[in-house]
Length: 160
Image (tube, rainbow, N blue to C red):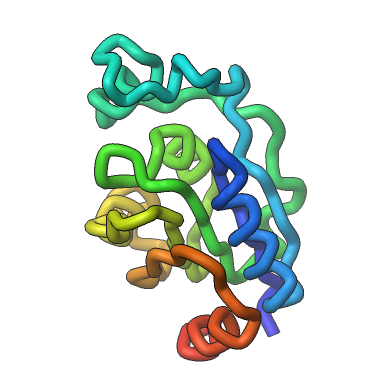
């Protein structure tokens, strides 16, 4: 059995809760993708065209620095990557995480949390960032309350 990591970025705690549920259901390790400079409420104000998150998301090459790193990333065969949906995609800080490691030979499974937005073209963007060496699943939006049984039904259908 491949060792599993659940890596996630969470701005409000919703994605953190979902990531912990997946880690528990799969017996996986958990890693929080933390920006080097934490986001403030003003940074996250999507209505402000000059807010930090708006400026980051308007630049597809933006890679905000992250704090900390996954020790021994090579030990993981499967990596779930979770995030809230920002501007219809993963936050740029998640892209920084993806750029930081070699995912060759790993299965990467994106998941997002959102009140209504779907996961969109996340898998396609992940494949572009990671190159051809990783297998990237289509992923899923996980919203609302999830039972352990619901999570297990989803993950059992994946190639772990």
